[in-house]
Image (cartoon, rainbow, N blue to C red; front, side):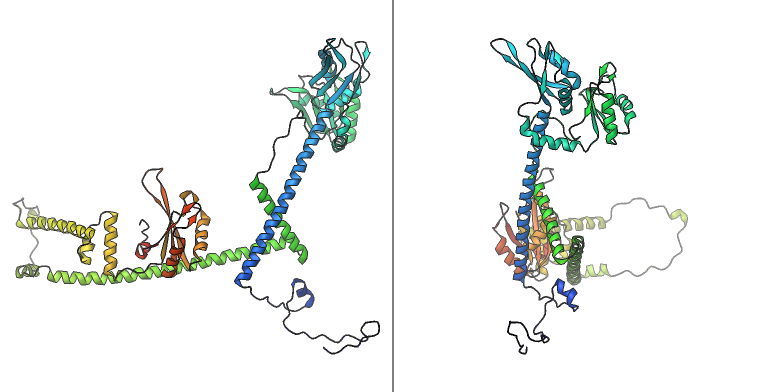
Length: 572
């Protein structure tokens, strides 16, 4: 670039000349829109760089999951602590203090006096061991905070047994005042009415018919007992609006219904809070697997949101694009596997055809030679010559169609029996020769022989392979004692293929489960056959994997016979 004049203050004196571009330009996601020019493709990463990026992504995801898991655990603990505090506050809201009690008053008197407001869980009176009298005060615990609140409002200063009693809250109430006020604020969001002193014979429909005159009722519930169809004498009614709630309280409080006075007041707790009597909450610890899975999902969503924010896009679009790329990659991989499998099938079919043609030529040659040298006697040759055709004759009459009477057996029957016995003896002799391996036999004899037993079949296959020019070098690796039958799943084949690809090109992986007997609880051995692209790859895999420890097992790796593998014989 040319020189640019500068003024005394350090600024440019004249207009900036156009800048020249030198070298390649890499346009980022934002520059592509602003620059208005095509983006230059980024250079392709090397294998080491790709692995480094994968490790970095994995590490970043692990750290994100760890942080999210810590936040979720802390939030869960805080929620549990808050729930416990609210439950303790509910217990305090259900308790009232009763003082200035006459010494003649007993628990049953207090229960009768304070019972109409709601079910009483317990009454605690302090007794003096010297005078054998109570100390003049007691604590009453109700099932609901509303019953305690109504008793506090309506019973303070009441005259009982010659004294005006005092009703108030326990002295430790201010410790939970903040949480109590929070619960009461939540209750204001609902137009709920507490109704106590309900006769045991009245039903939900009876109470609803009485209170629906003040407005539309959303819910009407009576607290049930353990006995079906019975209630505890109190319930809650929720109205659609606040005015209906206030009208019901002012009109129905201390109303005589069925011979009992109703106690009606505004609910001071939301519907989702119940009094558990101060018992510890049920352990609601999230299982580790569930917590980790939730943290992983949260971290993934946060990562998508972060990328979307940086690019100015919608996270849903990025997710759809990523799913589209994953589907394309899966389809490509599936197509490659199908093409590779089809190619292997064609190669195997071609090899089978070649072996079949070669075997047919050898058998035809052997048959022709054997037929010429089987019986050189002139009398045998004369018998084999075809007889001249008989002269045409008229059909015999119908009375001669009946079969001739049985006569004495001809000598030909003895010849046939002798030939059958000789063939059986030859079959037995051939089997003995094959088992001993002391003498070679022709292909014709081997094909005519009756094969019985797995060992005899294996020997015949070895003989046939020797007749076709010797054993071929195998490119199949057999892995035993690598996994148990209960560990076989859909991912095992991919894991084996990925592990064995370190030693060469893997063309096919077959997992074969062999039951050792016919019993139901018989042991099942798992054999894994890995077909490589070259025999040297199979040897390399055998040398590396044989004797290795895998999941607490010692792997046995051997090179498997190629012909047995191609014949789908995995029993050796």
